[in-house]
Image (cartoon, rainbow, N blue to C red):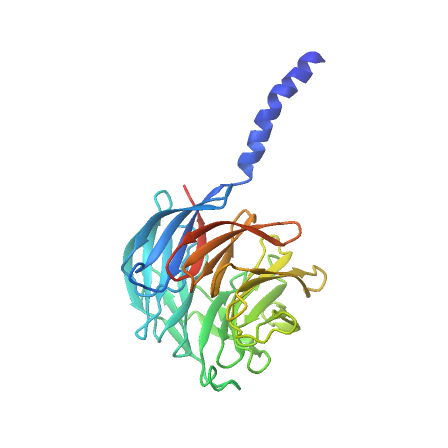
Length: 377
């Protein structure tokens, strides 16, 4: 009996180590898109240490003007970025997760003006681009070597909204694949529409109308970004112009609105500029950022029975214009890119309560507007 207890005691640390290894990596690369300044001219890469929340600079690519949004393919070997200019372009890079280096492959026209969003499917067949100023969306095929081909399909939105200053025409703001990648959802700030397209990755023109062609939100809302729960049941859309979050049952590509909840504090009278939204990895919480005069992250709890949101807390981002933010893959931290104060601030996050805690680190980065994680080697 004593020998058995001794053996178990000796095995216990080994079992603990094995369990810790199964929890996944603790080191990641953070790839940052930004608007160009004299000090920053492209995409930056940082090493993120999930035990502490610390960021360490690795590299920078200086060959893309205004890389305001980017995406990483599922293999973590390729990065795609928009160049938000009047003559919009899309850039492709190979990525070395060991050293964090980006190597330019090629570029193509985005088939519109001021591209501000890009996404890629899991099989790396297409990237999807939202061209803000021209109000158009484009699908660009991808070659085996990761290079981009010219746009295979362009969808031009039409219409206006009630906000004459911001909705004088269509303004494409996002192109989001559904979790099963059967649909592409296109948000248009200028027309208050979320268009829905069926996606066939094997087709030369991969997008076609879905059974429900589009859904609308309240006039003057300005839908910007959206995210899904991991179980694919619910979709949450952040409204830039009104500072609201709109909840939908996704219904297999036939969204049904179930709620609209404000991001604004009682009595708030300042400028509104809601920007980004993310569902927590466990599907229990929604986080949304508001720029303008608020400069905060708002936290909601998700009712697992019906998808409805309940306000939990609001957290100042300790900077101005939190255009983009991200939850780290471990769920322990939330990182915010404050565009106008040139910082990426790292906050502790409580996975149980969902609340955002103290800021644990701040890294200077000029005009950070897009943050994407990928595993480091």
